[in-house]
Length: 249
Image 1 (cartoon, one colour):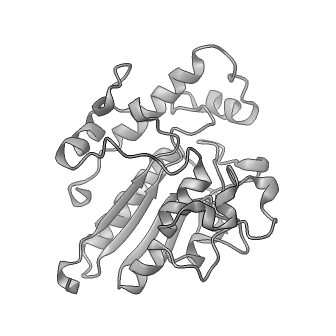
Image 2 (tube, helix red, strand yellow):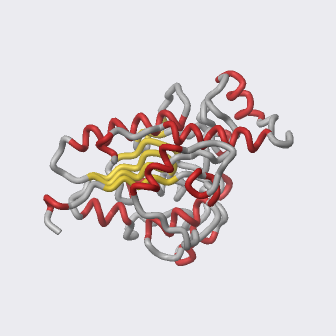
């Protein structure tokens, strides 16, 4: 493959998506027309299995191309804030990864969204082949508060914590659109990992911000029958509403 024919790659991951959570796989409680359109235009793998049902393990396999159990971090289910300083709880900086291989092949690489493969200062997307990173280091962050595991602020630009105002799903989408529009004008191909935190806990949809912030801090709503499903469904509609520009298609 010549440099002129190398394709741009947009790799989208959503967090805690069940098989029947999309219209194209049988969901009837809500509609996901944009995601269904993607599915109709491409190839669907309906007889495949995920390598793991949890965050960290799945991501270890995706980024290394190996069974997650070959690395110590792939054995935790999942990586928690309390284990951040434990030995080998991250992707080693020198380990081959998809992003390293593509970067070394001349791609501009970026991760926008969730990392969850090791905490600073030993591990980060920038140490594993990504030229750029904007997102969440840990397993989750509040959609409005941006408070993650351990109650710590978790929103980063590169390896620097940043304060931003906004709903995380929207922020990630807007940043991805800006990246693609800028990268499309350059001759260098790009590899963009767009890893949403939605529909992962905490249960917050972009409704009333003040109420959402209260839920994220205290999570008073968990345990009320039926409410979890409502917020889960709303967050899937949030993802579906982020229709990509033509350059991302």
